Image (cartoon, rainbow, N blue to C red):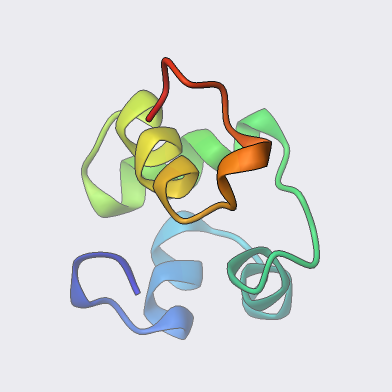
Length: 68
């Protein structure tokens, strides 16, 4: 979990449903841009940083080479 936050704490801080956050973390759901912005703010990074860190965890065939 990002910056040592428990899933429940991150969901609360980002004002996102805890169940939805779990789905996002497991890659079962895709967050909207507004949720991405809330999560980035909650963990203290830019949306771009959040997406770059996320891209590093995806299989390489899903990520554009310039992102890696």
